[in-house]
Length: 364
Image (cartoon, rainbow, N blue to C red; front, side, top):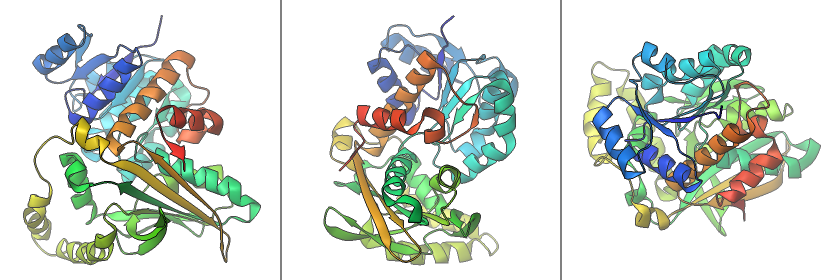
């Protein structure tokens, strides 16, 4: 019996992009969610796809959703709030799991809570398998391999080309806003440590120009040290708005201070609400105007050794295509490993690099 691909969250913006990418590959996913009528309408538009009603807050419903060997894709966030039951259902059933989270704390939780359970059941779990954070892992792995045995640190910077602000979804804007008050993880002196988000500003050369980026979390800090044990430091930065990196750093300090006083969190939410914008995300024309650009610099204790840049489609288009590629791989070939793992451990570097090239994410 052929393993099923189950898409949870198809009625949302990112879920719709994943669905389109799956259909373009000739795949016929089962559409899952809590709104039966909305699912049925989407299913009818795409040739009467199978539907399954499942609420992410109902563990019993989720337990019936997938079986061993199925591929469960979830785009339902925030994952810290809605993701744990879904991931548990996959791990317990032996289904393979892919999500679109950018929440590194959630990924760390999955590794702590579900890694051993997933290994017992044969479930391969791939959190954050999209723009967050496959491009950084690809670029960093290439840079470390080029740098050789002397490499000790890696800095990854996420950038975009084109007019980005109108090209952000409401979900991304909300995550960025909320992230300013949450700590960021980095790998430092061979251990995970927390720093205030945007507490550091670092510059990269992008298309011949120096561009600033501020400190953020990334799953690179979780997975790269496992692939390259000699790494003493792994740090991730966001440079979508280079000229705003230092003002954002100052805003982060103010927001973090405000949340420590009574009603401070509510005050931050109210004052920054206009930044969130309307529901939905950029359409195809808007996505075509922006492209992903990620830089990775590998260094020794004293000097840079290698620098790699990769470029690809818009972050949203790239996420949809990467997840569809991974789902197809797992449906057709199964998994060679189990547990909560990173992209390289899941597929092997050569297969991952070929898959990235297949969706247009390539070194430049």
